[in-house]
Structure formats: structure tokens, C-alpha cells
Amino acid sequence: MTNSPYPLPETPEHIELHDMHNSAAAQRALDYYLKEEMSAPAQDDAMFLIKPGISQEEALVHASDLLRSAAATAYESACSHQGNQRDLAFSVVYLIDMAKAMVERSLQGPVAKANA
Image (cartoon, rainbow, N blue to C red; front, side, top):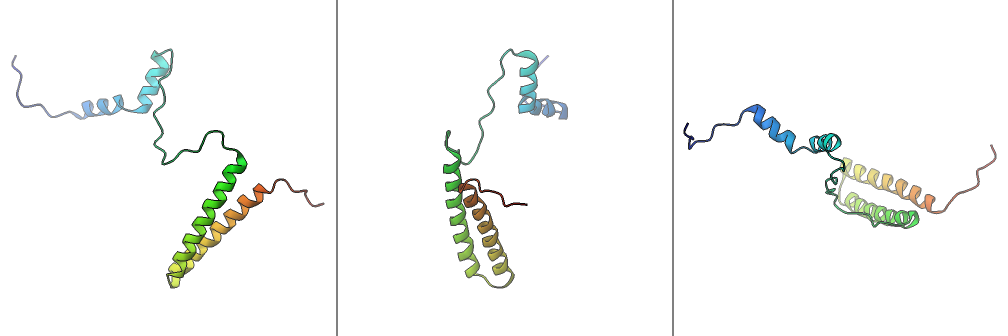
């Protein structure tokens, strides 16, 4: 039998098997049934990582700073628009300010509850 210099087109079954071979779900299934040790999970493609060991207070302070910057940006955007776009930008400022107030409140610690 001679080999053709022209490759045959791939069949849908071959493409499906190739896709399954490269899938994370298939790798986990094979690891579960065939390996004693699991493969290392794929590295997360996060845009940034949070420093390990950061305290809750440090994280909340940083979140508050980020919200302050976001509010300033949204406010500047609102000032440069008119009509509905201005209203939408100011609503974003309001939402950011509410989130910032919640973060700052959580930094204050527990507060005694009022008598009910």
C-alpha cells in the first residue's frame, strides 16, 4: 500500500477525540481512574494575584482605596457628559460610594446592637 502525499481531511470523530484529549475534564477523569497521584491543576490566568497572608484589614483598606479611585474616575466621567450618560455615570458614583461605605463600616469592627 502506498502513502498518499495528500493528507485526508479529518473526520468529525477524529476532531472530537482530539478536542477531548486536550480538555481539562478528560485529564481529571483519567487522573481519577488511572493515576495514584492527581496532576497539578492548570495555572490560573488571573490578571493579578492577592498577596498570600494578607490580613482582612489590609485587604479592606486596599479595597476602600480602589473604590475611592473608581469613584473619582466615575465622577470625572459624569462631569464630562450630559443627559442620560451623565445620570448613568453619577449612578455609578453612588453605587461605588455605597460599596465604599460598607467596606469602611466593616473596618470599624463590631458595633453593639440596639435594644429591640
